[in-house]
Length: 116
Image (cartoon, rainbow, N blue to C red; front, top):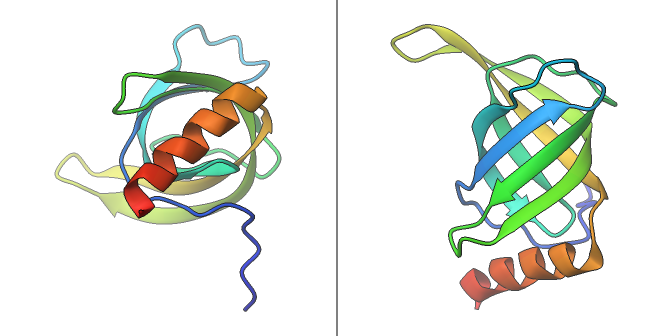
């Protein structure tokens, strides 16, 4: 299988708040990333999302920098029921679709600072 990613990924847990664009829900979910790249993130979430969903994302890097953007769900993997509270979890691949060039560059620099 050929690698399709345009940016290197960093396996790191970064705080993220998100909600589906167009959702009437006021409070965003708070979950963690599994990895991050300048092109997108992999989230571990407790709510089922579907391919094509657009999410409003607010990522907080360990450097205390905040990235606000929108992303599209490009894949979903059901992790099953995990943990003592028996919650269903999902791996979700998100491609950034609306992110400022400055925020993309911030993520790129953050990832490369660990890969040196």
